[in-house]
Length: 246
Image (tube, rainbow, N blue to C red; front, top):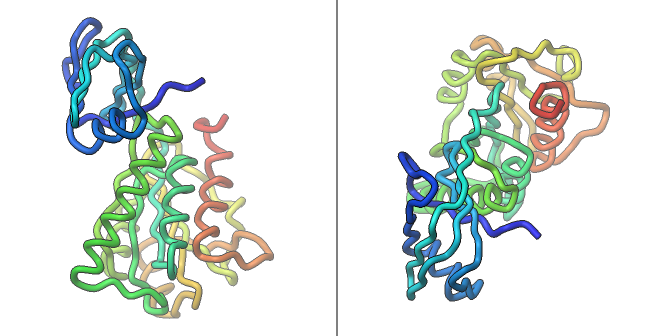
């Protein structure tokens, strides 16, 4: 049985024998919901490559302490993958975030595409980004990731184009793509950006902006997938061609 995973702010300088304290909502869930007990073992991670196996030494209402038994440091995965996800409607966005996190996305960028049905503005945008971040955090713990994904603030098309300019490779999924996703050459290092359009499709202006920034418009297959599943399929197809899944 896998040990439960809990996120802590930092594990910098922590070595075997040290005691690590977990507080707040993370501790409350462990103690009040999971009924964590003294002597049980847990995995603590900072989401930035470091994790420790630790034995619970004490528990409180919203706090517990654990003694470190073992430490693991994992190099940052390479190449890194950023998925720019056009806003889906309803709960499909959180579904996409959950699965993209589970399979290895390093950064997730919510994108307000011209034809996105969902509209995030003001307080709604802040709450929606917060939900995506919470979903990514829980999915990363479930997947036992040492590196947790970053969920960026809501981006516009100009910001996505700027992101593409700095990528080692950028692909835009489109049913009329100029080449197959399977034909693109993958870099071994750097950031690979995958842009997923909305249910209503990309506009000519969006495609032109992204291609001008260096992106390649690619076709995933003969089927037309939902925006909430297209990114997952594309990321899996690309990861399968890297040493990360080798």
